[in-house]
Amino acid sequence: MRIDIITVVPGLLDGPFAHSILKRAEEKGLAEVRVHNLREYSTSRQKQVDDYAFGGGAGMVMMIEPIARCIQALQSEREYDEVIYLTPDGETFDQSMANELSLKGNMIMLCGHYKGVDERVRQRFITREISIGDFVLSGGELAAAVLTDAIIRLIPGVLNDETSALTDSFQDGLLAPPVYTRPAAYDGMEVPEILLSGHQAKIDDWRFEQSVRRTKERRPDLMEGKDF
Image (cartoon, rainbow, N blue to C red; front, side, top):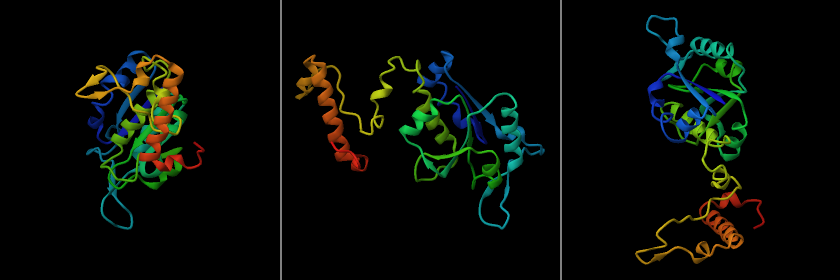
């Protein structure tokens, strides 16, 4: 999988892809992330990528021409399954969407900035618009990092234990159960005895019961339509 991220401020993405799981995925040849500075596709001396909105109003709008040049340059080199625009008014990202996107080949992510992009960009180039929540960030860079992390960790071979991702919260529509590690006793607090029993079937039942209980308490909205 290759993910190309288009941004006005590439420096914001220096850190997230240089460490941990994402770095390991690239070293294994399982995923490739490339960040593109949109200003490099501007033909103006000042490397301008934004302008005032027609009709007036506060804030600047990202221009269509630099974005078009960048996307077309990338598409001339390879096929892309999705061209994603990170925007507060997109569909809300969740685990099922991460699962779906992890099965794709190559993707472009366009990070919104200022007051957004010229609407013609969305009409001509964008295949999917995604939001990470009902709030506004200064730009789409952090959202792009969130999507990239959530997607790449699901690619087989990225995690040392491939079953780990399958037991994450939201994979089965429930929150994950409590987890414990050594020591078994700390300051009067004991690890539940069932987890020390070695009886895997009973442990699995306990974990499921705990997932259901935790979901009912913390995210009752996720329980709608479920009969347990």
